Length: 246
Image (tube, rainbow, N blue to C red; front, side):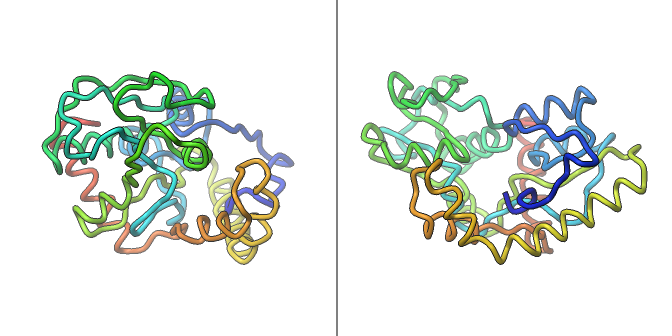
């Protein structure tokens, strides 16, 4: 929303909306030229894609929407069945790093799962949800007493921000398009970071959250990545490579 609201991208470009994992698939297939790529997909596609400015989505501490809902504490998930939303790519790698490397827990299985509005039903011992799905599920969750914010777990472990996605564009895109899109993102973000209260009012009905909570949620993220975020990206890449998760 901070990058797209109020910008008529459709006047010049075809715009598609999809979940992070699907965006990575479409970028890999050459179906999209630019987007807010999940960081693990950017690592994989770096031969063909380059960063667009220093725009992205990162959190220093809690993200509130990358959540592991669990029937038991995270350190007790050894041998558990963990259901993982099929929307995610970065968060699935993050989850494995936290479980297997930080807490030395080896689940029995990671099972892909679509969100159906009643995600907890029959979903196993724990359930990973992201984005709007995670925000909505927190409002109705009665099955999982432990709600674990994975970005906060990363912060406690590495004391670094966690970058979920970066804006990237195909290296062979026209220089004119690269400059126009980067300038458009900068303008949109400059305006929308002052409009989080208005965005909250616009979205509260669909998310089922009070406007002030949506405003606080949007304000908790970092959209222009600095040196701390770049260091966190390097750490995440190193760990994911070392443990063959990319």
